[in-house]
Image 1 (cartoon, one colour):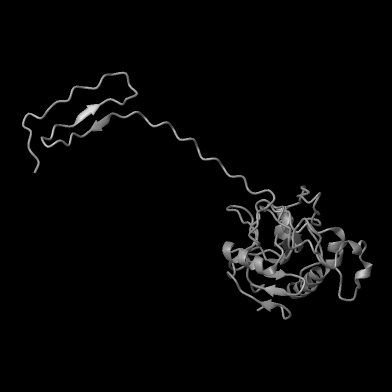
Image 2 (image 1 turned 180 degrees about the vertical axis):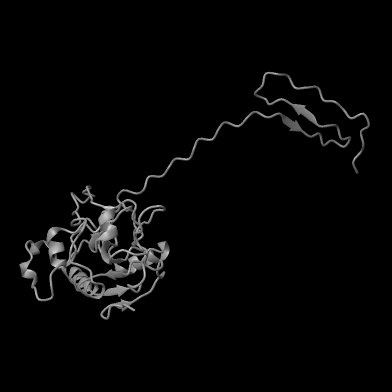
Length: 277
């Protein structure tokens, strides 16, 4: 029953089922929000739990790593994603922002435990995640389905078949930091100075990923496009029917609509009118 011994157990929606096969792999996401609590609300609402959520202070575990999580898109008649032995980590933060060093340190520690527990190699079969360009999706992501099905290792959400999100958008120094062994110090990472100790702008920012559920409940910069409702056809002209409610009860009189040029018909009285009490 693989539960990380240094993680805080926090179940939310539960597993999506048993694994269907494939070598074990680690999938890196970003929550596209500024807090773990906001991410939990989104997971509960969308039933999109990962195995782990990680911020600068805590590693939360939601699902046992022997069963599948829910945070990946999975199309019908395609490859398996969530259930293809994919252990999923949501990193608190945004794809377009640098990740805080303390958060990356927790992710690094968790990855070493997962690699040892599930025999996951320290490789990126579909290449390293691509960092944001001017705060936006850099494009050109490798989502090779054959690699996904047959090769264990690390994948960004941006490298998973059938998926369209571009998180986590790690930079090269961030990846190098995450791959450090316990015996290695951070000073060996080239570009370490680009990984901030703090990010004061994190709480006031919002997602640049238009179709990502926003855990903070704020608007995304590029909201999903809504389809305009189809124009309604003009109603057909109908004959107006007038009821004569006089005490002697005349018959119904049919008249053409006022928009027609025909003159209204002459009212026809009942042959045997009755008085209504």
